[in-house]
Length: 282
Ligand code: SAM
Image (cartoon, rainbow, N blue to C red; front, side, top):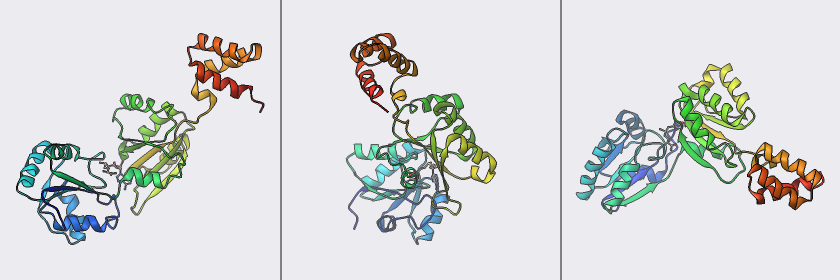
């Protein structure tokens, strides 16, 4: 049973058309209008599930204009659903402006959860860290991409990126440049589809695997870069680590930490914790 003048934000499949909830199907059958990203792309899903409802197209280039149309529909007491080509609307997809404006006017916005490529990939990656960052699409140019990636270099959390097939090789190359060859990468390709592949390996091995098989470069990709290892060295600079080690060999712990902090500019507490670990017998 629908309420009045509500926007339903409905997740749709990311490949396999069966990955849609009963509630989503029910909503899509009963709203007055469905806003879709591309009519042609959504028609197949809707027809497959026996849904015939008026559609309007809302994409990144007309979101503001169509938002006004949807506000008019809501003002007339209509219910509207929003779907995108795949997955959850407003997640690296249009929808956020629409939702913001509709909320601002005081209408109800109800999310209908379902598929999302990032979460789907993460759920099968075997990454035990309970935290993660979601970034979405990186910049398309190498320099700008590396500038963004550097922000994640020393993070201990895994970071999730979306990437297009024609940039997959250069993106992994940039990741090697920033994170080093041995950082682990989960590459999730064509999730829920016929050629679904989940490849977990070091960045450098993933690059040669991709290069050795052109078919692995096709389709849609989620990339999960594992977090930085919490080694003693990654918490402070290599220089600070070595300085502290030499000083500890000659001086009492407190004095070594104090001097190392002055020499290297590193945080005294971090150096103190590191000194305690360095002093521990192996
Ligand atoms: N809103 C969507 C979601 O909830 O995941 C994301 C839409 S974004 C425009 C499309 C990107 O998501 C693709 O370029 C790819 O990086 C990722 N993606 C979508 N479907 C995928 C799939 N089946 N397998 C792997 N990645 C996918």
